[in-house]
Image (cartoon, rainbow, N blue to C red):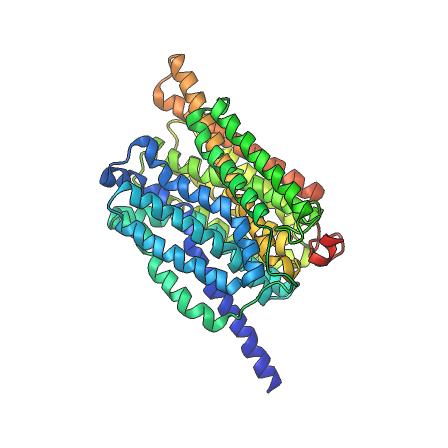
Length: 485
């Protein structure tokens, strides 16, 4: 009888993980699904080329700026409560997106989506760590989570293309609504509330404001730098202002009796290195997905639906690699799979750096996509496990928020910097008499090679500094008791 009860409890946890992962899948999808629909949105609502970028950028800015605060809020005031609030807000904002009759309504709803995602994402990941104690089961659960995260990025382009071609861009957003409703009904039945066991359920308001505004300003600087120019006064002022705010946050935290980030947390190798590697993975992987979309649609001439279908091998590579990583990481730890995955991804991205102006999908793109997918799959699982595999329950939301912040910052800066680099290279070549398409391809090749270089550097950092097995001293265990000492 006891065995039967234990089995039912275990099954319930895996059902809960499935419900949380499916609910978060819509957030992962939203990172890329909108990109393919942008031309249709532009034509329907009359966006200019300059303002259209904000359909993507406003979401990234708000999400990236608030996600750290969202994670700590979940720790202190209840992860299930914050997850449900964020999911409800994300679903309601998606409905407003789909019904938007004007540019301002769409942009405001996209900002609300960013708020919802910043609350729901770290809370959901913290709930997963609460459901599964540190050890093999948590590693397996985080592997499932990482697999859906990677697939969400890749499949978003496929769904975006299919929905835009076969229905309307509005359904890119409206499909989120039934998923959000289902999560609001199912998750409370499967997941119990959890929160950090601390004496004071409060954090320093001044510190929260400083870090939120600082992070938002930093992400804003990243998405606006291509317009202003990386050497412009505006870009330098934004980045400088963000650094001042984040510096003020560090000073405020040292003096606070209820800091947002416990003293010493970020100074520990177990917290710092996985987030640094995650930042570089965001730079490399998210910018690569964006560059691949440009190559398939603007160079190969694919429709949105064709471009989406072209991503299926990449998604298959991610699925295959995450399945293997789920078996390997618990046995040997995350370090070796992480450095191998990042190095493999670097090879695939570098292959795209050789794709010519008259390239063929089957010769130039398909092999690269498969390799990139395999490398990304190993990387997603390994880095997430390294950061969260043995994190103490008291800091789960904070650690999840930091990990989400790292990938958002990396993605924002990566896309902004590499697209600007590609555009500048193309402009320089056109100025010397090169044909526009040849110049564009040369710019994309350079951007792919830089992205590959970032992935390679990340693999070296993983090899030299990423902690080893989860649960070992010197591994990834992080507790609030330790960081306070």
